[in-house]
Length: 184
Image (cartoon, rainbow, N blue to C red; front, side, top):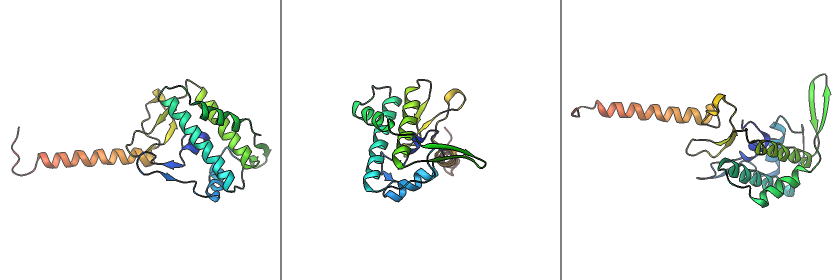
């Protein structure tokens, strides 16, 4: 959804400004997230310390991405953590008749996520943005022509913003044409 596994990991906390919702509340949530991410091993197992490590990586990546979006120097502690995790082993990649298969443990999955974050955050031409919908704090990689994308996704935030704007226009039109309203 975000266009990068590191930004997808960052997106496992929704509505950071208002009422944060952490989608990685238990080790099973992390296992499920890894399984759903195309670039990561097919199956990993996680325990409480592994979940805590993934959350630390997520928050460090979030901080670095915000630094990038806001054109600030990278936060040194976050930079150090992401670089250390990225030094871990890569997932194993195999080709078969059914396609590409990735395997490895959670450490290799997180190392891949950290390396993905490094690649996108180091690329000055990569356009990392924060969703423009008021309640959304998702960061995404804007690959649209002219980097004009405004929302993290059209299905969720884009439709919400457009529907709200439509309702506001209809309400304004009704009020303008209401009985007893004097023309200006």
